[in-house]
Image (cartoon, rainbow, N blue to C red; front, side, top):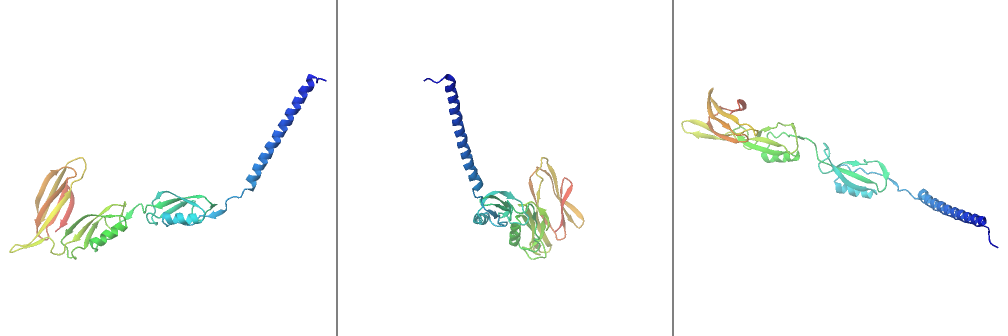
Length: 260
């Protein structure tokens, strides 16, 4: 016997409803399984970041890996206490509690942002060179003058001891040439001093007026009086007597006044 049309439609609705119910149940079962995995999965254990400050990056990497952590060099920083090249900062910092496998960023020291000029008076040139290198400084111009101190001993420096300067700066040194340095004994005419005065003209955009004078027994003698281009180096050879004064002017400003 043929089913009425309304009965067929009712049966289709019930079948679809049953299929939807089964799909919903399957979905709930899958979500429940995933939830159980999330709830019951074991988290990574907590470890403390070891203190690697002051170590080389290689030593720090080894210590962090031994603690179950990863290391990455992240950059450099100036540091007044940690030697250049050593680790001066970590992120996270020493003693922090983190999950095993955490990445720790390493920052290495660039050394102090400023260098302090050491006291070099009384030292020999090679000693001074080593002392300056330890402070990341260099030897600048070196010249000699007649002095009662032992030849080769540093008698003055520029900048002066204790001055703070940028790393890589040069320190000019004046050495003792001994009591007979630059002296020629002229028979029947006493002692004469021979000097070379070197002037560095300012390296700007204008020309400069350079004057070199010798003062002997109160009287001034002009040895050089010329206009020079910027950046030019001027050398004036001087013959004088002990006790004479040398004066150098650049654009009427006295830049040197020294007794020979």
